[in-house]
Amino acid sequence: MKIENKQRLEFLKSKLKQKLWQEEVQAVRRRFIDEIANFDLYFEFVSEIECEKIDNFVNSLPFAAPGRIDMSCFAEKSSYAMLTDLPCQSEIFFCVCLTGGEITINLYTKGKLENLAKTYDDWYCISPYLLFVSINLDKIIFADDNGEITSAQILSDKKPMPGIGILNRTKD
Image (cartoon, rainbow, N blue to C red; front, side, top):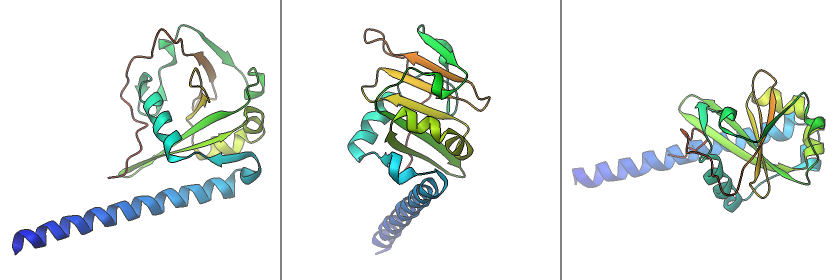
């Protein structure tokens, strides 16, 4: 009987932790909608399938520190003063990594680079590290807490070296 009670307690703890995680994610989604100008007009949250694809790609990138991509590992890269200086692409994925306490939340959104440039200050207020990934996963743009914006081409014959993968979506 004691074993069954322990198992039941573990099950309930797990369910509660999952519920709290889902509530936190929903709170962050509401924050995006509230704080990003015209979010509903310009952007959308990506599907779970797209999240997994982006997670796998992002976790293969080299990291210098938690949440900070090591851009020095890429041979083909360019620096930009502003997002509007980047060559225009149709759509990109945005990865916003929010950390705090025991939980790391990555929310991926999708939108056009030109709309991101219009609302960049709003995004930067939410997270000082922003990662943008092209839809076909061949280019990344990283904006860091110093305001530096760097773009790197991912060569198809040279995959990025695995990093410390801090951008994992933590659920349990």
